[in-house]
Length: 453
Image (cartoon, rainbow, N blue to C red):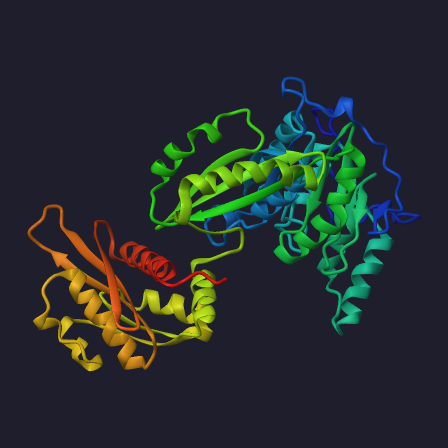
């Protein structure tokens, strides 16, 4: 016992007595009977709402060496079952700090999910931290060790002595068997709360979350609700103006909730509805989505998995046309997006460093005044150069007499020789301007071509 009267977790390198039988486990078959706790699972002061928390463990996250995608994946899956995620904490590989973070999380959340720190190396300390935070010892499981050995054997590999660490879990924990990796996960139930400990490898984490943990959480806490999302994607309007046009839908306390997320040149508008089941949630979304579409019109280019590239590709395919591209000043950013997202309908492009280079594709920019007219000339020339019906162009022109300096950016689309153009004044850094210009060009192509029937 420690001086404070708490149980000190047994170091993983020193095996405790081998378990006489396999620990209770979630093997995907739902064999374990879970006592469902409902009323008592609500934290006082939480407004009667079940709440969850994520604890991402790993010094590499704090050093910026890798991006924490696991927490985003967990958030999406918890939202889908109506479990509200209130907090997300990142902690380095320090035992005392992880223990402190776990105790804080258990004090305010019913469900705590950890990622990372259950591998075979000495800095994988999440097992020890969970044991200490829940006043348990670590125990060795022959059953889990056999699974680890079988995993390596099936792949022609050898078990390292350090892999024994992964067969230790807190006493009384529910083992979450891992068929896609070597790190068994586990769940520690603390009264009406629980700590779900998952591996940090994204593929393993999501597999166990979807196939083991979500069914467990539904069963234990009687989670019946469903949350459904619709994401409407907008180009041509800033986030603040979008917010003004739909302000009544963004009021707190509504179901569905509506929020916005700004990207360079694009705004995503999220509609989230919570219902007793998926059908009810979709029914709640439908009238809100319809009214927002009515207000914003063709500023909305798609929803959910749609991209500007996919929308442009669909219109080119429906027209039976291909596209040629010319870029002056944008460094090939638009060409990369056309080549990767509209590959089947993209005939090719040319990247120009200066106006004189436009002669390579038959455009004499020296005889043309004005950025919009130059962009039109480039778009028409790009179509002729590529031998296609549709041409597109970006033209950058510096305006040195303005302080602070700005860049005049013109975009144009030509269909069967008839071109239209738009001009904008951009400030900021060149990489951001290029991304915005490419997005606006894709959207102009979308608007210039007839929609598929």
